[in-house]
Image 1 (spheres, one colour):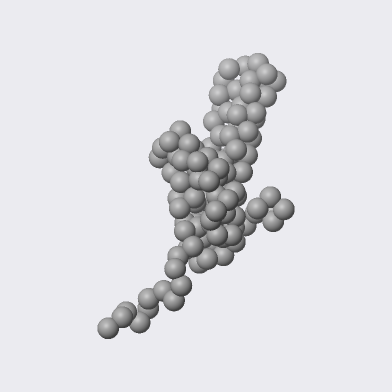
Image 2 (cartoon, helix red, strand yellow):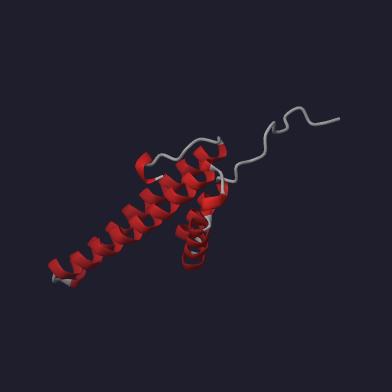
Length: 124
């Protein structure tokens, strides 16, 4: 007897890139990014939902790296005092990192419910 709560259609696989995005941020930074890049490069043959989540996760990974690193680099240039720079850099990195993790959690919820990610449609 089949389980009454079974899926009617196969899973889209949209969870996979979002999980690798979160792993990139939280547990395995280099390995997670390389696998996410590989998923991004091989996403042309996948369904629309998985491709959208893959592209959104890749763009958010790159955006996070750019924002965090340039903010820290600019603060190093414009704040000469090492104490103030360290404080600003730490708060900047933690605040942005937390925001990107929260976006990843929302994106994971969207992927689990088979919905498109919260991201500009023109880049998906």
